Length: 431
Image (cartoon, rainbow, N blue to C red; front, side, top):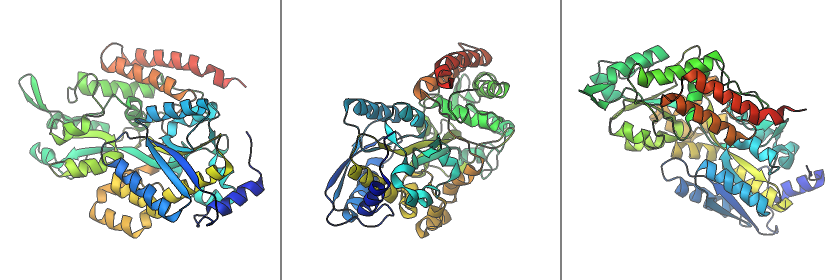
């Protein structure tokens, strides 16, 4: 990997205000292409446009061209295509789990190299749980921004009607199954309201990882070259997920759509749902009933994988462009901006000091549910991520869906997924 000299790094840092200071008035104009995914409902593009405009007011010699690049998967694919064409973006927000893919494609630069020694305090200021999907090979490849955990939302009116305490969420798997049984309302063969929905399309591996974490299982190693799909604790987690629909009939059988689950919740088709804290603002704006937000229920332990997107810096850019991109990322992740982003979107403000800003303190005081995902970080684990990540993730997703649709028994589905993933990852285990 080609490294900037110390003189170039420090010179660029001074010119671009790496320590969040102002750029020199005489610096040459820089135009940055910034890929950003739009994956969750809400006025995300308007928020980003507003933040970009504010940055440009403070950095008159930098123009940021925000390119809304579709889903997370679309964003990664477009970024890698642009890299291979010789015209990569300068920076992007992409899944934190695509870190190994970007490294393997030699597409990105480590932030600690570009920021130099002066950037250590900044990089050490993020929640450790989010940095678990940001570090590899002793370097920092991604900076947390649009990050989340999975949380449980519940309809308090439905709880009260079912004779449940409207202010108490299920704390264990057994409680969730029991609550869901009381909340499921049937009229003959029809179901008017399901007890719970755990989506199994879009990001099935991620929702499933909530269950495996709670059952004490870890799905991959830190090096991203081994997976553990066929462990007994993983099979037990999938069996529980299947049984919610097939055996206990408190959740729809088969595939539950990620994108429509919040709408099912709003329309009272389900009384509880698992989804990202990134939907918090959407739920607050659209739920026509009082609702609660809770950490995921425990089995052997509490826990959730982290999720969402990191900033990445791309190669094949000039030193001035890299420093401008770094300045933008640092500006976007100051405590005040991290708090603003969390308040406006529902994503977790990624730095502890963001939670001590006056704006965040007021927000949490008026809306305590906003702190649930932050508090769950104490129990969080790294989101599933490996080399050749999209391919390996698809293998796991296909196995999960085969079990949920009844095509395979959970143990067989996961054994098959393990065998196939081992074949894909074998080259990455060679010394």
